[in-house]
Image (cartoon, rainbow, N blue to C red):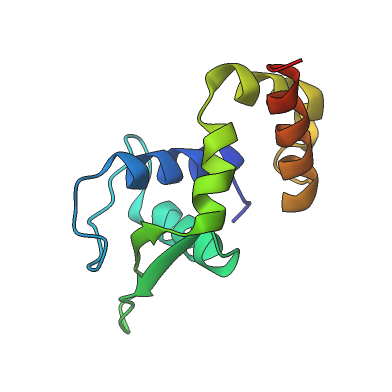
Length: 118
């Protein structure tokens, strides 16, 4: 499965906007996305240190649920949730958005966010 930066952003926004207790996992739903896609992308966000998540997988399949954003997750989302900044980042990276490293995406995102204040 390919990493989908749009879905990663959507998950981060959903976690931030949720009113669930951050000490427990949340039942994540994103319209039009399968539980397999969500589990994979929650696991990626956990591995990247953007969220804390819990592995609730069983022998029947993978199941990851988010608990909360980390400091880094809040920092990334602080720039990524701005639709103007996100749109400019996507335009700048074009087809490379999904395949560029996280560090490249983050640096372009920061560059675009700084442009709002210049």
